[in-house]
Amino acid sequence: MRDKILSFLFILGVSSILGLFLFWGPGGILAPGPNSEDVTVIIEKGSNLNATAATLAESGVVVQPWRFIISVLLSGNKGTLKAGEYLIPAYARPLDIVHILASGKVVVHQVTIPEGLTVSQVIDIIKNVSNLSGEVIRIPEEGALLPETYSYVRGDSREKLVNQMRRAMKQTLEEIWSSRRDTVLIKTPEELLTLASIVEKETSVASERPRVAAVFLNRLKKGMKLQSDPTVIYGITQGEKPLGHLLTFNDLKHVSDYNTYVIPALPPKPIACPGRQALEAVINPAATDEYYFVANGTGGHAFSRTYAEHEQNVKEWRKIQKNSTIFEAKNN
Image (cartoon, rainbow, N blue to C red; front, side, top):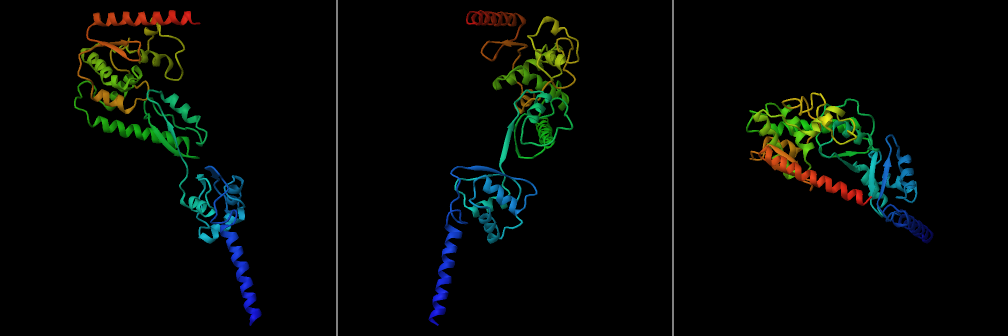
């Protein structure tokens, strides 16, 4: 009887030691992990439990693969681990990692599309996002993508992200168009998109957009040509490349459907992808009777009601350009 008790106590003691080692020893199921910093781990699609455990060990977030496998089996999560890119916190326990991989809460990335880019430029950005997959098969029409910050996960397709941008523009355009008050000048959502793209290209100052929109709407109302430089550039380049030089008088005479120095109305299509604020500016322009604007040298524009005032503003702008050229020449 005494021997049986001693044997039982011995087995119990050994089991306790093994249990302590398994659960709380170095690398144990409930022991802090070895990684002193957050680590991003990628579990590839099709990885079985052994491959997943090996990946975690190679990434330095678990001490030994078999310990992680035991954690999975004891937790009842076999078959529930999901592929993807995961952020493993510093000192995460094997059991914590099991729960992270079972949750499917993968790392979310973001890409920001600035306002005023052409579709070609947006597609170039998407092509250069390395953790997306596939190619953009259907290139959208000009202006059809909403500038915004978009979220995605590693492995999402480029086509999927572009379609998300397309849907976002469609929904935003419909929402803003439905809030319009006056349809005399801008008769369709397509015209709204086109004029907003011109406003977007003319100024990067948010507070100026309603005022710039008002100038163009005033010109349309009076039957004046819009005379927007960005439309000339788009007519020459089709938005696929930079113009490569400053606009010349010959450029202003370039015959195209987009050159608003030549055509007496809006271009047939947008010249870029406008943001929400530019779209709203066209629907809600500033209350002004101004017909002209020119750069003022500070990043914004000088506005005027008469051509005489505009000529004076142009002279001031040319002085600024001349002084800037002299300054650069002296310092080169």
